[in-house]
Amino acid sequence: MTAPRRSLLLLVIGLALGPTPACILVGGTSTSSDPLPPATKPNEFAIYPKRPGEVVPTNSGAVASASNPQRPQGDQPLPGPSVSAQVNLPTSPPRTGNRSDSPQNIEPSQLPATITAARAEHPAAQILDVPPPPAGVPGSFGVVMHPHDLPEPPILAGFRAYLENRPDDAIRSLQPLDRANQEFALAVMPLLQRGTQVNFAAADPNEIAVMVDQFRSVASQLEGKAALRVDKVAFYREKVSGFGQYEPWPEGEPYKPGDLAKLYVEIRNLGSEPAAGPRGQGFVTRAVISLEVRDASGKLVDQVDPTDYRRRVTVARCEETDFTHSPLHDYYRTYRIQLPAQPGVYKVTVEVRDSAGKRTVRSQPVQFMVSGP
Image (cartoon, rainbow, N blue to C red; front, side):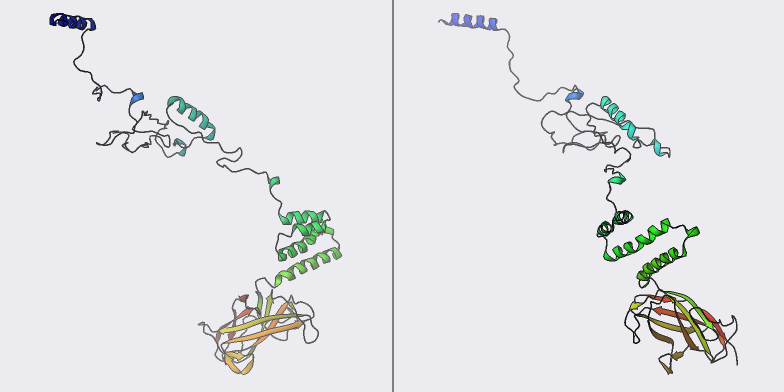
């Protein structure tokens, strides 16, 4: 084909195709300054309704500020499309000192309506439902049990069986308790049953005597473990003929220097233990009793040693051991005190300790006077 014909063919083809741009843009970055629609903006923050207005970043490139959401230079967004959603829970007016003004104080019955309204207003937010508390237990997520569903205490089950004349079941119900507690419960049950049935206004004396014996039986089991008590410390004139049987020394009457003062002491809760005595006795009661005499300035005054009358001691200590045919409940002791030679006001104090040294008690000081020659 000749050159003129080739040139003409190319011209015809160019006219048929139409105008063609000089270059085609294959790749690059858009430089449009128009803002993206809210649905296509890069994800900077995600707002969760933990507290009204709180902002929580969800990726490493987000700036922790809701008022200035700008990315630092060099930080690249995470790949993939994302959506920015900001949700602000409804807030109430500022507090005025009343707790009911706080947005957190929402009644449980208002929670479903509040959550539904927040979802309708902010569909992009993730609002979680909080399970309501069980009925009848506000603010609690535990299991509510009826009192009848709870296990019955051993003492209640045992007493019920005893009242229904099922003694074997009563003993079996008390087995979870310690042996001492079982014995105490079994001793109290008959007394409790009798006490709820007797007519105290017109009771038979014999029936009351049985109750007294039951009381004493229970008390005797506890007496050796009870705290000691000094019920009385008193000076007396002559011989004591029995528990509480003495003639008191006249109040305010002084002693003469060097006299022997007689002291009466009542002690409670010592308890007696089974033991064979030298004359066939079956019980023994032991105690360690100490006497202190102090002058007006609080200084100890020397006394005669009860174990050796030739010695002088600051504290007179006596070890008491009494064998009896029956347990002692009314325990008393008498002592003689060598009074000081110097006139003045003095006080005596009695200390009682059991034989094991586990229980100790001190009496209140008792005052006496020594006159001049």
